[in-house]
Image (tube, rainbow, N blue to C red; front, side, top):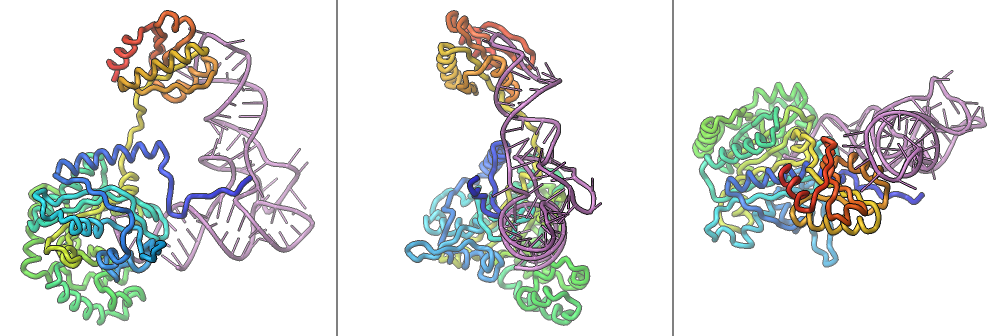
Length: 416
RNA sequence: GUGAGUGUAGCUCAACUGGUUAGAGCAUCGGACUGUGGAUCCGAAGGUUGGGGGUUCGAGACCCCUCACUCACCCCA
């Protein structure tokens, strides 16, 4: 036997049964996004490496160790996108979309790539829905975005979720907080785990993410970022929460919610599923008011979120049901030809038909139809060809009647 | 990147403390039954036991390496 070539580690095939679920979710996602005025935007799967280094942040884990970066034949350093936000920002600037009258509301569904160790809910090629709004300062927009995510999950009948919100301040107030946090962490240094001792210097905010019991207890005593927000950020956060209340959305203020991406400002939020394991965040997002300007664009604020589709799919309940279709069983060459032209006609009328082009016994063909879950079988033999009337059998009831072409169409139309 | 667990037919699983030719159910294909499905019976096909090396008279089982998957850390969607 020849050596087999398996799928690359951390990637997987989405087979027809599973792909059907993806289609259902994608249809719903697009429907909801369009309801809220978002338009689809599609950008390339790879970009200049620099885009992510600047956008996602040079100190983020994503950039440091998780990017699929390669050099092309002309010596350019390119990267398969690990997230979508920098691409959208790039595209808006490059195409001057901010000069158009249309609202800057965009969504996108597509594959992302991260060189992570694969695990449940974590793949090297995975898919995200990405939603972004630009040039909207009002915290009501932040709340509307969360409401939309909530709406989407409801429509998909996803149960057991929790919404966490926080504010990480802006570049005016965060440095004060970080400084205070660092000095307090410094004092407790000895009691922290080795990992957290490192974080004291690199990124003290991340100490809140630690799962070690001792660290958690110590972190409890640390100041909360929400107590250190500047006037503007505090007001923004308060009004954001008020609007969530207004929408009747249940949420938990989680001052320890620290998004790992460097660019977030003010509002951050996450929706987790209690039904998942360690990788439980299905939606994560927040504001990034400074990115556009830093990319050389206009000073336009932004907020958005990403949703992991593999994770979402694993908590969406699906009831399996096959679309009704007609199986054509034929006997002999003449009948085959009659079947082919009938099927051609019916398909043009929007009827799903299956003719398998295997010259098998009627019994075998009936067996196939049954196994595949056909709603009807159309039986064509010499007799039927001559009369131009065919045997239509309802597979659920077992009833069978002789029908003309038009009558067949009528029966199927009536059923669907 | 770190740690732990698991790899036997397409799928779900057997195979005693190491002992003949690695089995069963489901699925597939064929037949009983050449114009009528679901049931039953019979049969066929399907495996380098993830891969490589080692120990042994003998390895699916034990040891080492490697690959993949799973779970957790880390990080994130």
